[in-house]
Image (cartoon, rainbow, N blue to C red; front, side):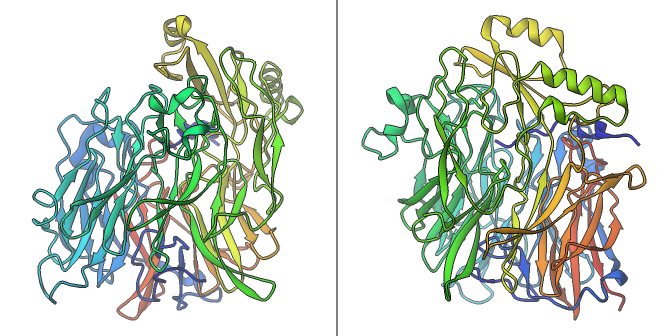
Length: 637
């Protein structure tokens, strides 16, 4: 249930954390259990990063293996390094273990996706989890195991040593997550982010097609015993009982037929507190909420659950009655801040809106003031928008939040003129302006602001590093009777059917006749937020085009930070991996990748060398070059 960026190639044709990552390891998708994306490795520094060069490249073979299906793939994976093996999944859920020093293949596992299967969001696998059973004998099969969630909604356990199934987990090493209602098509529900493990419980979220129908399969989060696979608990972000405290936020008992809210993005855990932090998605269908009046808890929220039971400990909703596809898409970052001479454990989330929410980890209370501010009401029959939305007073928004006709931009005068005319015909009142029958500008667009790449935290400097985009979507509601005509008028435009509601929803990027965004660049920006003061320390354009004339290209994927004072990030549509000075944001190094690098990199030390590794496989929604490479960089030996 993620945002669809659309065909972006036409943009222009010219710390503290639970289980911290040791210097030699990267044991979890986000670097550690808390998703700080920080490494204590310091061999590569600001002084020598210019000497960084490719050390090895591994090709998965998926380009040749998958044929036409590869054209619907997105390589968003971050490998993990655990117990001497570099482990990752391909978009088609093949799991590969490599020697981290040489890139030599150790083992491969293929779960065998069904022939002809096509997931609604395309083929995606962001990562895997590794867990060691403290009760297992040394050298026993599956003493350390890899957990994989698949595009066809299976949870699979593998032996880290051999890549073979853990036969005692579920049935022959796997559990099939059955949707609560029959799917419209086999890929309506899928798993695309890495599972997590907390105190012997393995937890997995899911992604649901959010534009096809209102009563879609539920976004239930499932938890199982990490050894046997026995069910431990489940949590549906949409309450299903009248006695649930969240039920009152769904007017007219609409929770009985509502759906959505699934945790498709990466989850964080705090084992010491036995807490699980869910980033939940918006309710279905995305752009019309007349069938679900109220705030719609626990959707579009950060929800803290008890790891042992799944009970709600606290929740914080970032968007009430979400009509804008404002999923909490970023992994919640578990950090420690220093305020008034004391350490405060916090949860930090970069939202699609460009807001950064900083919450107390034990209570969910904001650590910077948050105001409920009024926003425009809907004039669509049947819709009732929330009268207010939460706005943090600090940090300031990382992106602009309104695009008006006066802001129209074009590479040429005609471009600018057309963009201005297009904006004049649309509702441009800014953030949280509801979708309309004539067309509403969503700025930032439904891809963010922030997205699943999340942020990286430098505990030494208290800096939170975030990648954001600055593009605009137009969303228009289409009365049900007019759907067929709208579909025939432009077969290529995205129109969600939103079955079960009176309106379908059209969504497209706001661009000029040349396919260039109607807002001025930069369209991609890397920001450093000082979490002690709640201020932005620096912002720099990320990526460039046309020999540097356009700086700041759209890009999806996250940064990492190292003790060497460096920020590494790919993400940009120009498919470079870059290194920045964490203090200033100055670019210090870049290297061209063999395909799009819309994945978060990682780093580790093996054989005495620090490596920086990124998956370069491209992204079908970003229209970057597709490939199947895992590329490792290091200093010369």
